[in-house]
Length: 448
Image 1 (cartoon, one colour):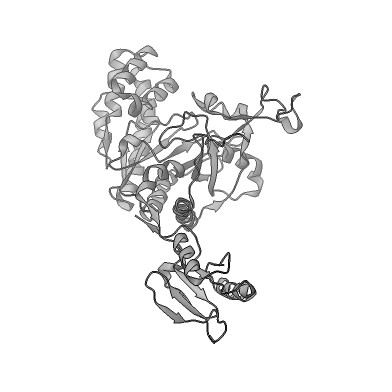
Image 2 (tube, rainbow, N blue to C red):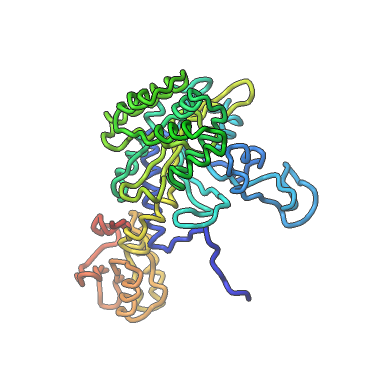
């Protein structure tokens, strides 16, 4: 048998870490539902043609799939050979969602609010916080024909609500509007807007000097590149950024529209979540389907780590040629977030079990199972000891698992059951139909 070797880029948490992850998932899901978002799940694969049309780097990130057996394309366009792939694993959840809307438009009520928590796959070079398989938690709002702009201010507030309930430390949601750099570049005479936006999106990774060089190489003059970098330097917690942009002396109707839209978002943020949202004009987002407001979220003090939550508005991603379903969405990169903060967190125990039901003899197993069933009926997680042994050994087993209580069913001359808190040593008579552990012990807790 060959030696088992890990595959980089595919995180697998230990049980105690999985408890932390599950807590985050529960809080995020509950928050999304509190804000009226309905859950959906989409398939893992999409046509490669659709996936590969969404940005400069998507082709090299897509995992193509096919059956190992050779031959021509099979049923539903599924390739039988990896040499002729037709389908790929989705690298985000927005593109599958847009397709889902088109396929189910007649069955949905608009504006449609959805959340989706699923794994995605990207063929990236694995590094800190960047995986080839990871979990995203998305919310989107789509409508028919037109989408009200107030939704663009609402989504970051939902994220702020979720993050405020999680032990992640201070964070900041950075907001821009793609119309601002687009209008600014057009006002300067630049025409290849998509290329310029992709270059500016790399600012945090490669720095302003290199970004300027790439812009000049792509057709901008040195003066235009300098002005574009000056625009990217502007940030503010209020709408004062508008005057700072005007001071750069560039005019265009698209720029004016983008400034007005971003100012409206920032004003709502300042009122509803003061200090958490900031206008940051270097945020561009590299995917081509974004058309308006865009978001990125950073942990304060860990800005070099990059964004842990991002998204934006898209007006044409979901369209059947007759009807367009514009939307706005934002996505928490849960695996990326946990990769950074997991070392600072722990679970109060590595198992859901609150109680271990001990066995004096193997013949007592049926009785122990009845006790466990009674406890579970009232929502108390428990398990029966794997083997009948000396009680000292069973207590040590519970200690290794982090189980706080050991239950001793009545046997022999004992007329009543008893339960022991193995941390304090306190033991008392107990009835499986009424006993309850302290609230903090019922489920594992996440500790910061």
